[in-house]
Length: 223
Image (cartoon, rainbow, N blue to C red):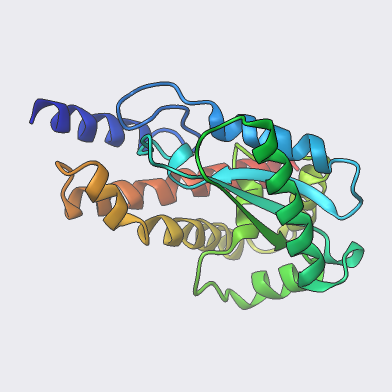
């Protein structure tokens, strides 16, 4: 029981203060997701379609364990690829090459996402966020890659001249869209940290929305 209490307390402290955790639910340092992301970046950085990559999921949220997968969001510019099939082949090839390096014994899930300027602008203007959107992880402190800053600037330029109130609404909406995906994992979090109640987790995730809002605002202001 004490271990569960410690794990719940540790997760709360991590989740409410860090968007990029290096700790497992038991407090052990875990660099595997970041090493895998760096490997993917090294393999793809010369490809003109490649924008960047970011680990996401439990491996960087403070509740990973020995059974956790390594999840990567890989950002592509669709103008350099022949549709979704081209991205899927590139993602599969990258995953296979990483697996051959044996950087981790965990399963590796690589998910490709297009960061299309037209679609991005339309999404921002419509406020249409009904699901988690992988491209939003381009705002993650974990995101690396040769064109990450370019696409962050693109978003910043789009909203720079908006009235302050509307700008804040956009930023808060982006943060809610990211945490929407985290909310979908509440069942997994409760299984791994059984002492955490549903009410506690909802409070933690609400506070994570504020963390993401601050992160996105900081990036857009500096872009």
